[in-house]
Image (cartoon, rainbow, N blue to C red; front, side, top):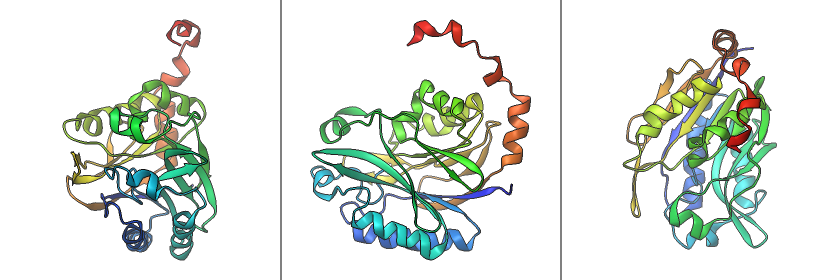
Length: 265
């Protein structure tokens, strides 16, 4: 199988303006597809903005709402799969969600953030309760998390045991937590033997200062792509051959002794 070229759109877009964010997504999808990418990943809450207060509920839509259909049209027009963050309305609840659509616009997966961070998220969102959500794309098993979720090793290990090859993590990581992007994410990729695409917002927004540093971390713990601090589109390859070689050499998953860990539940 050829590598899956993955584009990371590091951007805070235009908070509070989904229409402008869809235009920005369209332009990024066109550029990424022209550079040979088969997958474009955005930051957390890209469609609406993150620090938008009551705009979270006002701009929330069902997964198959107008914005979701617009993203599907963008994906199909440019022939590229898209993973985007948005506030999802489900009945009376609003979830911090990420949705993956295929290169023909077909919905592939929808994930609701399970671990909410801080007062802001707990005030505005209802947590999801499905830790492992997956889809198949380009011969790889794709998993989805959002931001804080990846900081729990049990979460990532659950994906590893379920066969995830490439974990997509749209995020809104702010100062002073840059060590997560710099150190924790590549360690997670190494210890659970997978690729992790960690895609952040950038710059000031409301009370937050987003630190960028989006990356594609490989199963060998090295950076296959790394962004700086400002808005940027970076590309890297998730290579099934490197993944297979790394899993053969690194025996973490084979050497586990689950019987010893029961008390950790």
